[in-house]
Image: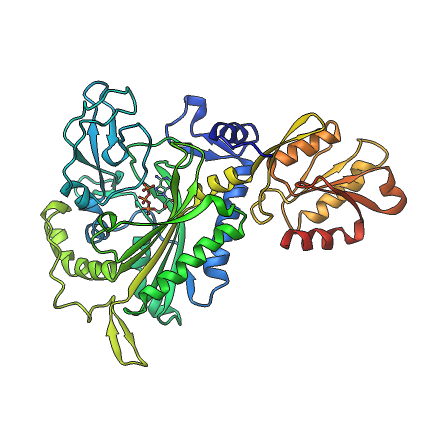
Amino acid sequence: MAKLTKLDDIVSLCKRRGFIFQSSEIYGGLASCYDYGPLGVELKNNVKKAWWKSVVQMRDDVVGLDCSILMHPMVWKSSGHADKFADLIAECKKCNTRTRVDHLTDHTEEHTEHIDIDTAMAKSQDLSNKVCPNCGAVGQFTEPMPFKLMFETQMGANVDDSMTMHLRPETAQGIFANFRNVLDTTRVRIPFGIAQIGKSFRNEVTTKAFIFRTREFEQAELEFFCEPGTDEQWFEHWKEARFNWYLELGLKKENLHFREHDADELAHYAKGCVDVEYKFPFGSGDWQELEGIANRTDFDLRQHQRGMRTLNKWYESKGDMTKIELADEAEEYLKGPLSYFDDQKKQRYIPYVIEPSAGIDRSALAFLVDAYDEEEVRGETRNLLRFHHALAPVKAAIFPLVKKDGMPEIATNIYNDLKKYFNCFYDQKGAVGRRYRRQDEAGTPFCITVDGQTKEDNTVTVRQRDSMEQTRVSTDQLLGHLRVKLEA
Ligand code: ATP
């Protein structure tokens, strides 16, 4: 029986085996920033590949995009981020620690849901029973205040024309800003989607829990444009598709569920929102968001149409966003460049948008947690990662049983041949049992061992990670044998 996975076990395995390191560790580390090591980068690339395959490659109605991280400041004014992308925080008067008000509880347990700032400001906040998560003081908080989450930076060398810019806090706005470009340069017709994977940055108030919530992270977002009136049906479609993606990649069903947002949690423009939640082994052991799926209506495209009409005001304001009022949309609505003309129905409209928005790092953490297992084998504990084959950083490890009798040469030839097709690893150091255990911890599904019999009959042993079962396979059938198993 596998024991309950603890985050500490995962963190130590990740460090020990080179999945994930603290950023700038040689200088004492940088809080809430992480580096992916040799195995981690392969895992993360595989998560991205699997997302891209399911959301773009396998579909006829989705195209991809890769936008810059720095965008025109009007993008953030129009999207609402410049004014509203903030968390409501309160400072503990005892220890000066600032905490998100929606993270404060009476029992110090963590809730992780961002609440729309307008909704949060409108609510009366009674913090008299709330506990400081740092020093434990009760009811010692300042009045809540908004804290802006976007990172600022300066662009340009000249004092006169240097501009304050923001690192993008989500990848979605690059997609909206390119809606017209994609429409004009490809054959897509509504309904269709535009997908992007890339880095986002948020100056999060509370981090912790390893790579679950960091200040620099990667998102995988799809904006799926559809005709108003068909949005609810597409919302259901993407809910199901995204939930199944996690299941197909091996997350256990009992650890995954949907959580519908309550009406008072919804952003004012959203018609519906549901989170795919995973039962992470930290905090109060509660369910935590893995991905959000929202019906964003026609809000974003309308806002950008207003923004485009406001551009001159932005230049006049010399970049001071507080001086800008977005243009009224009445005149532009339905006719602007971000509208869509359906040439069959002879109708123009602003498309509705369904947005599944996933975190690559958070998904990688869920896949690590879910795959982690410990079992007793002949009086010893075997740690292993039971990754889905598509996610395993290394697909096959090749060993000579001993470093003599021509075995290393045969094993090297096999390794050189197989690595053309998938990620392989060659290892000839130490006892073979220990080499198996190292690969179990890395989540490698197959170990191939060249032994004394190989020279006689051209067969090798193929050991399976999960069952530890060994079978003999002839070397000329090895590639086919592994490919069939890896794709199963
Ligand atoms: P949360 O409530 O957890 O702060 P959110 O609702 O603000 O998240 P979204 O803006 O919907 O998150 O972002 C979509 C996805 O991006 C999230 O489901 C999550 O997987 C990922 N994500 C968001 N913020 C972070 C972060 N700081 N670190 C890692 N991943 C993140």
